[in-house]
Length: 152
Image (cartoon, rainbow, N blue to C red; front, side, top):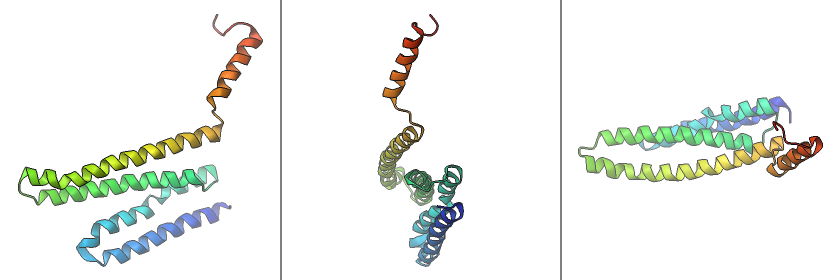
């Protein structure tokens, strides 16, 4: 895949997200937060683009980076909306009740981010051939070739 075609694919997805955002904005106040989250898909496309430009591949790692950035942006959008809605409530118990959904979303987000981190670690290990069993064998070969461990 050429550099231009990969970037065009990312750009096409971002453009589609911005078009969908413009459509959802037409629903008025009810579409405000969904439109912002949809628009964040286009804004966070730079993470996949940067990975593609530096590595030259548009693979699952690029999309995992994009997803991680989008989750972060969406989380921030959601937090601001919770704070705005909470500022309109009169008493503390109502504000706490209003924040329970956000708290549940945070727990779910942590699970998703943990999964993505695990995926990224596996991809890095695969990319750079960092296999612990091979490292132990290599260390034994080096020690055996010299006869004594280094530093003795």
